[in-house]
Length: 160
Ligand SMILES: [Zn+2]
Image (cartoon, rainbow, N blue to C red; front, side, top):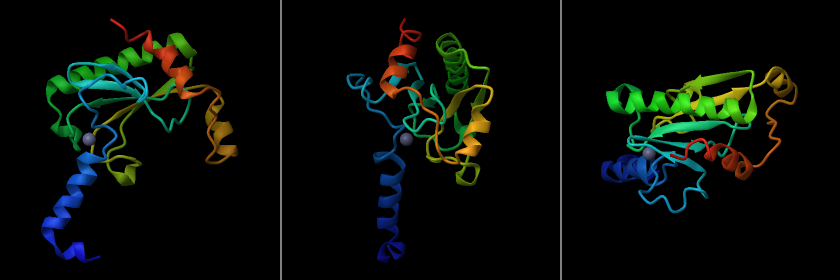
């Protein structure tokens, strides 16, 4: 625990934690987008599948910039984020015919953010009865298809 008393080392760890291993800090090359389940790259934000989905079709919209506070996002980032959220919702409606959606952000760990240092917006399709079923089975998730299948289904809605 000596690093607690070494500010430079602490900063080093914080930096690594904040950027190097951040799943939302994607590289500029789109070559491995399919492997990373990145569906679309916009000007300020990108769309990707959540690899730990709450339901099938759980997608995320995130700015390229490593920004931890939603309030710090520029008007351009915010506007495009919402525009992409609409596009995700439409793609999910056409692919999965959900009964509803949860669209939102978990800001801070206490609010349930898995990655609290990089803003991301969740778009989660919901079906009547899915929550009831999941509350019965506790932490189990109902995932009737693989991420690869979901990716192929949704990707066509993001091609220009
Ligand atoms: Zn990041």
